[in-house]
Each structure stands twice: as structure tokens, then as C-alpha cells.
Length: 96
Image (cartoon, rainbow, N blue to C red; front, side, top):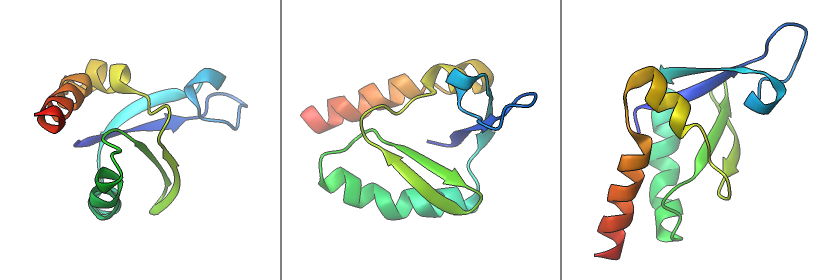
């Protein structure tokens, strides 16, 4: 997965989450984002977790979302990268 979705607070709101009106901006992963993902990926996959969302603030992992990772649509709309297709491909490989 080469992209993340930054959530930017709008106006006087301090929360950046999309449900609170934050603006989602797709951006390439940083080297640190990739390091975190590469470190956690094998551990999560070994536990059967093929799709998770990793939340980071700056260079630090703040949350691992295993029940409701989001932002497929926003990343697809802004970059053309089809996150859903990548996930389906991973599911098919895991089921084979």
C-alpha cells in the first residue's frame, strides 16, 4: 500500500476525523510509515489480519485498527490506486 490518508481538521474544529468534517488528503507513505508497516505486517499477517489501518501522528504509531480500517474510497478518488482490488487480491491468495 503506497498511500496514507492524512486527516486535516477544518475551521475551528480540532478533530481531523472525516465524520467530524476533517479533510482527507491522500499522500505517499513516508519512509517512517513504511518502516512501521514493514515491521508490523508480518506479525499481523501471522495472526490472520490481512487488512488493518495503522494510525500515526508524525513518526509515531498511535493506533492499530483491526475492525474498521477506512479510506479506500478517498485514496482511490485522489490517486487512482485501487485499495479494494489490492485487498481482494490478498484475500484470493490467502484462500488459495
